[in-house]
Each structure stands twice: as C-alpha cells, then as structure tokens.
Length: 353
Image (cartoon, one colour):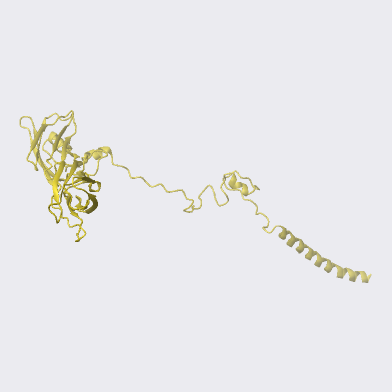
C-alpha cells in the first residue's frame, strides 16, 4: 500500500510535466501551419453597411471605405493620387467696362497702331452733355498702317447737332463732318506714304454745337504712325551683251547685296547675247518697316586664269522707298573690263499693310 502511494506521488509530477510539454508542442505545430497567425476580429466601419465578420478582402471590392478610410475626415492623398487642383479663373472684364475705356471687344491693347487696333483717348470734361459724350466716345482705329479712322458710335439721346472737325499735322489737311446720333460717324484719313518711314501724327480735334449760342470744345492727341509692308524682290535677269573671253563662254561671278544688307554670290557660264535668270536674287520680307531696308546693289567679274578677284564689298546707299512697284533696268560693267557689260532687270513690290 505504501508502495502504491509512493508510485502515485512520482507519477503525478511526471504526467503533469509531459502534459505541459505536449501542450506546447501542439501550440508550436499550429503556428507552423499558419505562420501569419489568426485574422484579427473584423471591425465594422462606422456608417458603412459591412456587417461584422465580413472578409476584409471584400471591403474594397464592394466600394466601401477600408478601415483607414472613414466617411468622416480622410487621410490626405499623395501627390500622385490626389485629383488635380482646379485653378481659379480670373473674371474677364465686363463688356460695358471695355467700351467705357474706349476699346471695342476683341481688339488689341491701347496705344498700338497696327492695322485694325484701337487707341482710346484720355477722359475729357466738356462744357455740355452733348460735347462731353462726343469727346469721350471718340475712338481711333487703324485699318491700314498709314490710315486712321476717327469713329463715334451712335447715341439717339444726343439731340443737339455736333460738328466734328479734325486737322492732321502731317499734311495740314482738315476734315469736317456733323455727328449723326442714329448711325454714328466715321472720318477716315489716309496719310501720304512719302518716304514710307515712321512719323509723328497729331490730331487737332474741334467740337462745336450747331445751335445758337452753342458751346465748343477743342483738344489734341498724337501718336506715331509706322507704315508697314510686305516686300518682294523678283528674280534677276542677267543679259550679257558680248563675250568677255576670246575663247569659250564667259565665267561670270555675280555678287549682290539683298535689301537687308546681306551678301550673296552666284557663279555661272554665259555666252554673249544670252540671258540667265538668277532665282537666288529673289527676296521677300513680311510685315516690315522700311527704316533699315535698301535697294539691292550688285557687281560682277569675269574670272580670268591670271589675277585674283576679291568678292563682296558692296555698300548699299539707296533707301528702299515707295512707290509700291518699282522696275529696275540698267547696265552693269565688269569690274576690270569696261567693254564687258550686262543688262540686269528686276522688280520690287511693296504691299502696304
């Protein structure tokens, strides 16, 4: 009996020890089979329709915010995923504001004198409502670069007839018309091209009420007018009068400077009595003033076996000026042999913008 008691005392600790070891073994075994560990208990998203126990992988596929996205404040998006920020548009000027400043809608900035633009005048204070309206409603436009239009829009409220008289400083001419309240008025003046260069234009404007004891009001404005052109120089025709060499064709070295002052050269063979067209002589320029343009200049040399010719050295002195079409037809002598000569012809066309 005492033997059994001793055995039981020894067996119980041993069994308890093996029981603990066995439990740890199964715990390690379970973790080995599922290294990620058990899923955390799913949390329902506030305000969503996802029930507890739903698979988190299904949350995004259903279009429901995930655990890091709530229907309240959301975490800021990264620059790559954030929607582009809409820039605030600057409100455009009201149509009435534009007209009050003397500019028509869709026109260019004031002060420019290119074709079609408008130049507003300063604000004036005339002695009567009629004169005050006309003085401040005048608009200057430039349909061509040597033409100025003075316009006043219609205003049926003006019942007093107003005379508008404009003197132009560049020519001394004066144009006078009566304002028409129902249709408005336009006075067009085309300035003489003369040398085609820029010039200062001053308008002396006199307004007068055509009624007994009517009031008057005068003022002036000035601006620079710069005629602008499209310029075209045609190809050159080169006619050689006679052979410059005793034997064979003449070896022609032609040199010229285009209206912008750049040097050019062309080499070719030609017999006496023949004509050669030089397409490279043609030249064009668009929307340019004439201040820095010249008539082309040229010279030629008949190349000989003896001696050396130095090309270039053409200095342009004749300014390019109107009229708008000029034909050139003249004789050019060879640099060293005055008996060797050619006739050259070409045309310059200036198209006023």
